[in-house]
Length: 219
Image (cartoon, rainbow, N blue to C red; front, side, top):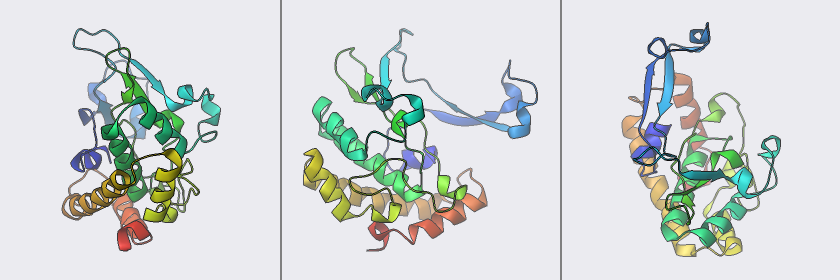
C-alpha cells in the first residue's frame, strides 16, 4: 500500500521489504511471523543526524494512545493543518484521506497522522508512514475517524467532502479537485500495477470488491 501511495503522488519516504534473516538482534522466533520485514527511512533526522521534532495528532489534541480512535475527526485534523500550514498540505491531506478510503484502511487513527517541524518553528504534514488495507483482514471495517459526518467508507462522497471543506474552512475547489484527481490516478495505477505489487491475492480481491461499493469511484 505504501508503494501504491507513492505511485499516486503521496509523500512516502524510502521503503523496502528485506529478509528478516538479514536483521541482527531480533527476538528468537520472530521469523514465524513471515520471512520479510518492512523497513522505512527515518524522516525525523536531518542530514547532520540531529533530530527533527514531530508530534502526532494524538499529541496535538492531548489524547492518550488508548483513545486514538476518538476525540477528533478528519474535519478537526483539517482545521489544524489549514491553520498551521498551506494549501499544499491541505491537498496532501485530502489526497491521503481519499487514498485510504480507496484501499479500505480502517486504521488511520490519530497516531497515524503527524506534523513535522523541519525548521523547528513551522508545522507541516509529515511524510506518510503507515498505510494498510484493513478490509482484507476485517470485512466490513470502516474509518477509524469520522470524515465530517460519517465513518462509513461508502459515505466518503463529494457531498461529504463539501461538508468537510465548509466546516473546516478549506478551499472547496482545492478539496474536490484533489479528491477527484486522486481517484482517477489511483484507478489508473491500480489497474496497471495491482498484479505486480507485493501483496497477497486476498488483499487484491478485497480491494477490488471494495472499490465497487464506493460512490466516489462509481459515479
